[in-house]
Image (cartoon, rainbow, N blue to C red; front, top):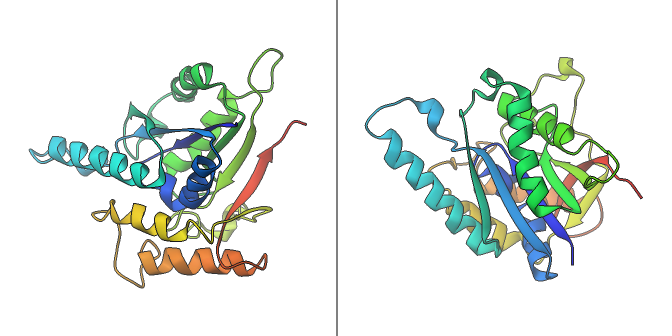
Length: 225
């Protein structure tokens, strides 16, 4: 049994990036936990609707992950879409606290080249928290792509997502899509990149590139044999 940890900036990133793969881990009997660094809605202001929106997003996350079979969830309290206003050390320490408890064998997180600043800092915090030191957890680290962030970055950044690790999800694609329906308030109509149709097309394309019906793609960040 593997111990799997996902470090995601916002609720919905985890399903967009690796929802099918998480369902596969659960089916294989692996222990899966998801950590969210922010509530995903705080950047929308402090109106009277802010707290109900936060609670609704948390409920959506629990419902979405329940569909995938994931029960262990950690909700962080970093500022949404403003993680860059927080010292990286504080972000890394939040990840380290979960890492000490989980001692994961495998970590999934964002691609370093995403347009969204929270995604980029989540990636950096994971690398900081899991520095390969003696006596510390040294998990395999994989970066996922997040629709409406990864592909929107400028090519001038020189950090294109170039997958070199694929997980077939033919048997889990429908559950991934059903899970995203729990985040209905965050999904958009086709042809938006963060629509159910676009997510399915991407999974079909990633699958076709490796000769299967559907897949999720990752970049291997680190693996210590």
